Structures are given as C-alpha cells and as structure tokens.
Amino acid sequence: SEDGVVVRGAQMLGTGTLMSDYLFVSSIQPLPPGADDYGLSVAIPVNHPRLRIYPRRPYARDVTAAGDYPLSAVYDETDALVVFDDVDVPAEHVFVD
Picture (tube, one colour):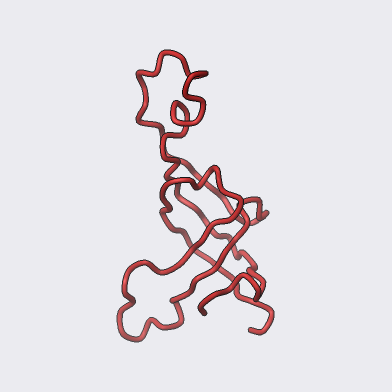
C-alpha cells in the first residue's frame, strides 16, 4: 500500500545482525514463477517491537579473556534467525515491493 508493507515470517541473517541499527532484508534467492508477491527489499530497525532476533551460539569457545575480545568472544559474526511478527514497514523504508 502507499503506507508501506507488513512483513511476516522468518529469515536467517548473517554478519552484524546484533550490532546493527537497521536490518536490510530482501529476497536473496531467485523467486519461482508466480511468487512475485513475496519479493521485497526493506530496512527495519532492530528495536522494532514485533521483531525477534535469535542469535546462534558463538564458535569462539576457547577464549580465555573475553574482555580482550568482547564482541567476537560472545557473538562471533552474530548470525541470527530473525522472526517478523507482522512487522509494519513504512513506505520510506521499502525499496522493492
């Protein structure tokens, strides 16, 4: 609509998810014929109340001084599963719909 779009579902996102102000979410795989309604490209603030972020466990288990590596010791590359629970995205944050 002219007001924006509603995003529902989940997507696995890569590096930097937990350290971002906004998530850039788009269809990265080619869509099959007839799935045009599912192609989008949007920016969503990570503090959106209807957005849930589930980071994976870190790979860096042998870090002896987490203070020396505060982010990589805890988050590594911060890959995460992001769940969109009817997230309203305003039109100015919709790049392709």
